[in-house]
Every structure is written in structure tokens, then in C-alpha cells.
Length: 113
Length: 111
Image (cartoon, rainbow over all chains, first blue to last red; front, side):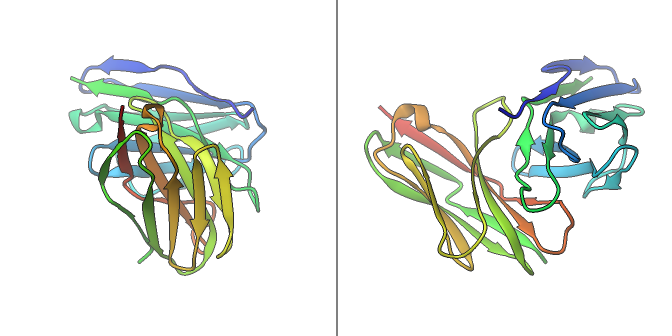
């Protein structure tokens, strides 16, 4: 079974704090993704990575950065959290090539006060 | 512009009342279409991948079908535990490994 885990289920932070969200997958997937999900807006891609130390911007990268030092781990960083970054954050991973199904973690619900 | 539209936004059914959810897409080339189930407060759970028109896949009370313009998720004799949001996503041919999600259909099965 594919397993994608995220470091926290719930997180409460103050405006201006630096926030780290961690994601780990155990299926040796090349690709990893960070999304945010908001009511009425659906899932929006923030960043993705197709290899170690590689990253590409998604549709809404502003205010976020990422790090991928190891194949199984992909971190999302909010350099200075703001209230409009309150959201559900979802990590996913997939193989490259024909088997491209993305598998998701349980999500981190972040509240920025 | 690549787009994925799901309908209806919400659907209430009686237990045992079969129905279908629709996912229509406009993309420049289709590499795959995915269906997920999402329970409140949780991450999406993978259900099916379809790759070509005419393909069908089944799992318990769910059956997914694909044409050149849309996909249907048929739910036969649903039970209350089938209540969830069902997400459709499309992998266009020109977006590397990024996929486009629809906004989902919220399904509620009444006992």
C-alpha cells in the first residue's frame, strides 16, 4: 500500500511566523506535490518536485517555498505566515511516466491567527 | 484553456437510489483521468484511473466510464457510507506531471 504521511494534522500559528510542513512517502516516487484546498476553490497546486533538489512552481507559489533534500521527503515552507494562508494543505506523490496516479496524505489543517 | 467541470455540485440520494456523477473536461490531450473520494477533513483517496475512451473500471458499488469529452462515476444502490465528496482530475498532455482537479461533487446518501 502506498503511504504518504504529513507531519501534523492540525497546526495553529501566528501571523509572521515561519511554518514548516513536512511530507514523507514510502513508495520511491519521483514526483511530489503540495496543494492547498479551500471551500469553493478546490485543490490548487502550490509547488511540485520531480527529483531531489528539483522544484517547479505550480499555480499559486507566492508566499511559499519548498525543499527536497531526499527523495522521500518534501517540505513546504511559509516564510512569514499570513491569515490568507489559513487552509488545508495536502501533499501527494506519484511515479513519473505511464503510472502517474497521485496518492495523497491525510492533510494538515493550518490556522494562522 | 484546460478545464475540468464536475456536476452536480451536490447530490442527495436515498439509500439504494442509483445515480451518476459527471466530469467533463476540455484539454489539449488526455494522458489520464482520475477519480478520488474525499471524506471531510481527510486527504483524497484514490479510486480509479482511466486512460482511453471506452475504458471502464469498477470497484464495489462504483463504476467509472470515459468518453472523449467526459467521464461518469456511476453509483449503484448506494449506502450511507458512500457519502463523501468525489473529485475528478485530468492529466493533460502538455502540463508535465501536473494534473487539473475539478471542484468535486458532494454526495449525501440518506438512510
